[in-house]
Image 1 (cartoon, rainbow, N blue to C red):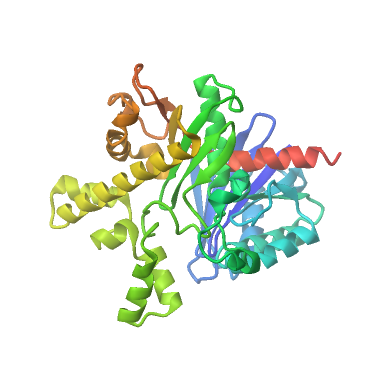
Image 2 (cartoon, rainbow, N blue to C red; image 1 turned 90 degrees about the horizontal axis):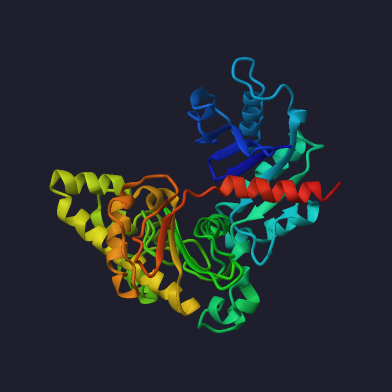
Length: 402
């Protein structure tokens, strides 16, 4: 079985074609700047990159180009599109849906109803689903939701302390995101630790990249997470503020005469590391500034100290949710490659028995135990495999149709 996994953004479309016999990635790529005159796709096969600059108006046109890449006479990996058995779609917001599901008209309609909760991602996902239905009409599809893994969080933890009527009227509550990543790394961590995930194992999974969230995973289930009603909540990120005093929002809106849209832009795209440094929201740029001791170095240091302190604080909050912890797992771009960030975060956690092996911590983008033998809490870095998790769900659901 060959499964096509699609992760659609508002102006991009990432994809992987995976052979589920051995879970090998046959080809993968990313179509960027969809809707603009300079859109292009970077397609990868066996480590080789093939870039095609082709302007496309929408996701359907982008998908049409990508499907042709799979059968390209020079570097194609299949001879005919009929070899693609199923398509798995990453959907950021699934509301209260608890599991992945086969795409039906009802499922698509449910996604439309959720657009007010995620006006950026869900329309793109719907667009790609409809494009697949038109271009691959006989191929079954599955939706896998970032929010599903967090639906086991107790009501007392997902409700906000605001008038209950807004939960009833508008669904205002904590949903959580990055669920597919948290699900994958928590399962993989249990395997690496030699533990049964459903028998007393308590993990804090830290998906840290440009977007970032933590999750408390107890007995294989999410019991709390840091992102909330939207992905803006929780820890500080590259350009997102994370949690702050709500009065900051109303104060600045009044003082600066900002509209809700302008305030939303500030908090999502102009805050976090970028906001503090006024230089960059990319950790690599900040470390370069610090290493070069340039004019931005002091602000970069300040930002990194604040950033890692907040992450450590929220790890402690996740530990409270489980009344203990056996392992802390780092994943995502920064979590997998940020040696300095991991060290700074773990320094704050020595009080709970975390002891980092500094030599082991030099690893980047590999599975590695980072803690010492006498550390009371195991620390690991595990590269996330969201696409593989989506492909596995898709395979299971489609096979059950037979």
